[in-house]
Length: 103
Image (cartoon, rainbow, N blue to C red):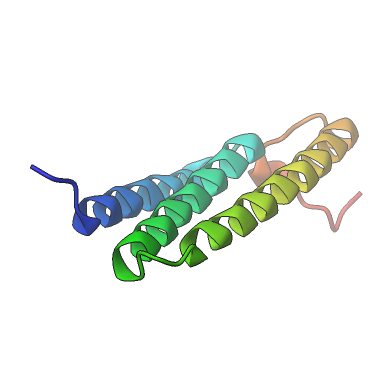
């Protein structure tokens, strides 16, 4: 049995669904960031798989994946910096307790 495009797309969809569920159901800001990273990795898998199977000679999917990884790293760095700043100010990372309009 060979692994085809459908297998990669199903894996990508499952990972994206897990990440979406985690982002919507968690209250911890760090867990939400981790779920968003899972969703970005699912997009990477789909991009590389589609690139490999649709246009096998070109590296467009891999180039997009590198850009997505770069954006994900920047998002994680900025997100963690914001979470640390909020934790220092409020002593919690629970997103339901964060109301930044009130100091």
